[in-house]
Length: 211
Image 1 (cartoon, rainbow, N blue to C red):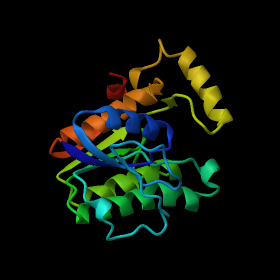
Image 2 (cartoon, rainbow, N blue to C red):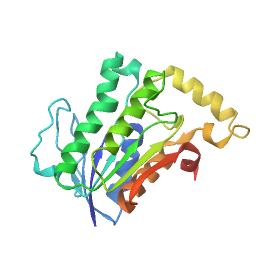
Image 3 (cartoon, one colour):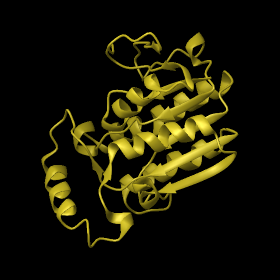
């Protein structure tokens, strides 16, 4: 069985991934570092941390695989700098600590359009983290690039709700890559990538996440 570190366990995809991981017979333990405590579970190790000051030598870094669903929006973060810290700096710090303690697999929820050379700040940040992760040395690196995520969020994002309604109404006529991707499908693919650990670097586009 596999020990999995799940980053972003309180987000839309992260919560769905946590439920799946805790229910999976293939998962021995889930290590889920969070800012606030999660509901206890026999298979859950939940370090409460400050992501700006992660403990480099903590024993809980010793996992087989990392599933990273950390992410925010520029609006929620408050600035481009704060957004980059959550979507770029935190995943990289987690990846480096876990790799240093023996993790061989990393699976990331990135975004459609991720490109380190993009003129769009959001897409460029996503592309930067993908490229930087590739340089760490994981045996298996999977990069999931969903489009607009569907699901019930705890935060209220008005613009996103409107976009979901519009995209949902057009779902039957839109090309697959532009359709709304249910968060549960992304969670399923994220956990599968972490557990199956296919060797090499793999990009999973939005249309493949639809099943």
